[in-house]
Amino acid sequence: MIGGTAAAMRSLAACGLLCVAASLAGCDSAPVRPDESSRSQMVRPVQPAVASRNPNQDGPPPASEIPFNLVAVPDAVPKPEPLSATGNPDSYEVDGDHYVVMKESHGFKERGLASWYGQKFQGKRTSSGEPYDMFKMTAAHKTLPIPCYVRVTNLANGKSVVVRINDRGPFHKGRIIDLSYTAALKLDVLGDGSTPVEICTMEPAPDQPATLIAAAPRSPAPIPAPARVAVAAAPARA
Image 1: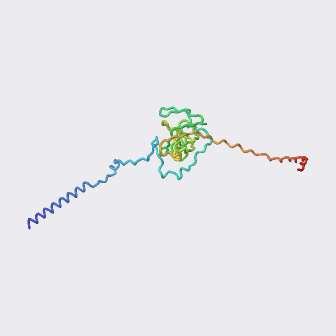
Image 2: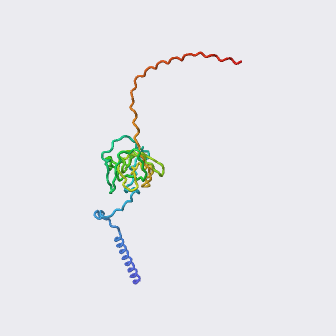
Image 3: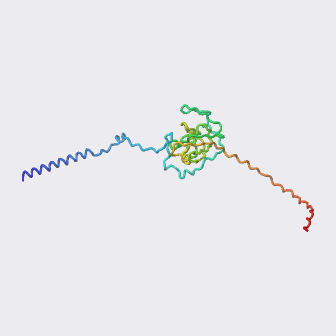
């Protein structure tokens, strides 16, 4: 019995040592809460960017900032405007390419690719000096006078809009116009990055003639009664 008791005690001691070892191992593997200094050195995971194929690596605005029913924003209405003092140099250069600014836009028509720009440029100064507003019907062109108005037609679906040119760009081969976010939305080109379009300039409606104050109308002269002419009676049928 003594031998059996000693064996049992040794077994219990061995179990106790195993439990202690397991406990220590568990403490070693427990996560350590970093202090503030080590936390500042940790690399935060990069959030995935909103998908966009805009050549400027741009993107749409946050959903919470998009006005309700933006597609119902009316087209720009052509009207007479003085040329921008800052947006119409005789010529300029970008990335080694030389551009000559047109003096007037009458009858201009062009086909090529349209792109769009949005959140990255919101509020920044355009070539006209105005802040960019992606929720308005505006666009950028390399050489048309600023401001002017163009009709843009999406050649893929036939949709068209009228925009006001108030900025310069896009400076990528083959692209002829950079649309505001709203204009791109109305043309259904947001998901394409670049889309074949045709643009043609729009002229302001001719001014209505000045209203003339008419003099008091004169009473019309009496029309003389027509003279009676005697007509011989037709002979009676026999």
